[in-house]
Amino acid sequence: MAYRTERSQALFLDAQKYLAGGVGSGTRAPSSGWVPSPVYVERGQGSHLWDTDENEYVDYLMGGGPLILGHRPQPVIDRVCQTLQERGSMFSLAHDLEIEASRKICECIPSIEKMRFDNSGTSAVQRAIRLARAFTGKTKVVRFEGHYHGWSDQIHWSNRPPLEAAGRRNAPRPIPNSNGIPEVLAETLVVLPWNDVDLLEKTLRAHKDEIACVITEPILGNTGGILPQPGYLQAMRAITAENDIVLIFDEVLTGFRVALGGAQALYGITPDLTTLAKAMAGGFPAAAVGGKAEIMDLIARGEVMYGGTYNSNPIVTSAVITTLEMLRQPGVYERMNSLGERLANGLVDRMRSAGFPACWTGVGAMFQPWFCEPEQMPGDYRAAVPILKSSPFPAFWKGLMSSGVLVQPRQDNLFLLSTAHTAADVEFTLAAAERALAAMR
Ligand SMILES: Cc1ncc(COP(=O)(O)O)c(C=O)c1O
Image (tube, rainbow, N blue to C red):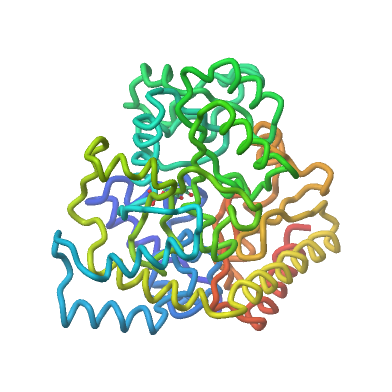
């Protein structure tokens, strides 16, 4: 069937009358590459998604990360429905499900000795920063260019800064990512390029009396899956510990995705605090912050305020319990990661056969093909900018979409897999990629 977008386009016109920008989040808008209009979804099942124009796709967006078990995983849906029907949707009181869900999270991620639930990654990051400041009595936050930690005023800076405004590489200028963020908050931030041990060490030693925490994505999912250079995260762990600086791993994207224990399990690092969301609840809006008991106990002692009407409600805690039960089955990550690697390698083969330079980065369940040679693969945001600007990825995306493969439209985003993806999905995707690349040539 020919690829159609007429109904989505008509719905987008209607949506703009009531919804600001016609969408619920900027990442779904034409300005994020969704042209001619956002995709209006009818339904999803497993690894597949159908839109309102009756196009069927193999879905590699996976709700931006939460759908680690695919769309509508039956055991999670059943458990959530049972909780709703037999117990309720909201108590704002204590209940057993939050104990079971938090116990499971602590078992999967040993650096989390104690935790609290939250409702979004953005919010969990704010809590982690507050805890770090309260624990150290210091204020400044080190964050890295190209990383995304949610949209709050205090951290949504220098995510994708224009290089002409961003200052020198060894002393970047913090750039707010939105109007309305008070300029004065720049004084609370130290922005650095990622994957540069020497600069990190120099900066932390020079400002150790002011810096409360370093926050990092352990794998740079928000700039196309750039990996930490060997030893970088280990050095970051050592230098922060030596200088009484709290290390926060933002595992909102990587947690329960790259491994059951997150990226910290892959790299063998014990951060002081971890933020989680997305894959943790298999498609329901749960998040968490957790880590060392001595930091989390600031909450227990009432020294750090931690509120939230919707925190650890019975819907999301039921979803967490069942999602983690499914993810803890033997072989789940091996299978998902090896399928993802097969797809990533297959895409790179086909890109090269079509005459394009190609490589991929990330891990199997979360990767991105790049139109550059492996030795040109950037290690930080600044090195990525020229490649992003000249990448033919938008044309590749268009070809994939019209052949029934749904991915994020930007080169700096990711292919995300789920446990529901199959070898047949991979074969289908590779055939679609071949057609897309032939058209680009
Ligand atoms: C690493 C990381 N941190 C934080 C966030 C913000 O999470 P949320 O969209 O749930 O607020 C995201 C979202 O994509 C993310 O990728």
